[in-house]
Length: 154
Image (tube, helix red, strand yellow):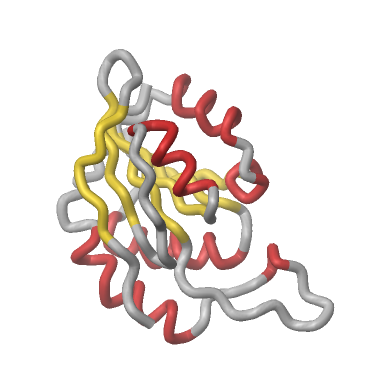
C-alpha cells in the first residue's frame, strides 16, 4: 500500500468552446504560468524516490498540470487513468491498495480530489485550481493530512 499520497487539482482551465468536450479543455496561459511559479514551493517537501508514481487523469488540463508538476518532482513513472476523470473512487482506492509505490502524486478534478481527501482523512478540504494536499497513510490504511497548499491566484 502507498505510504504518501499527494492529491492535486488541475490548474485553471479555459472555458469550453462550441463543439468542444469538457475532456479536451486546456489550461489557460495564466493558469499554466501560475502553476510554473508556485509548484516548486508547493512540492518543496515532497521527496520522490525510485518507486514514486505520478497518476493523472486523461483529460487535457490534468495532463498539462501533471507535466508542470513533474518539472519539479522528476517522477519517472507516469500513469494515466480514465477513472480519475470519470470520478471512480472505487478504482482509485483499489489501485492505492495494490500499489507498492511509497509516494503517489495524483492529478485530477473536483469533486474527486475533495472527496478522495475526505475519504482518506475524514477531513474535507476545498480544492481551488492548483491546490494540493499531502496525506500520510498508516499500516491500517488510515490517512492523516500532513499539509494543504491552496492553489495559486490567477
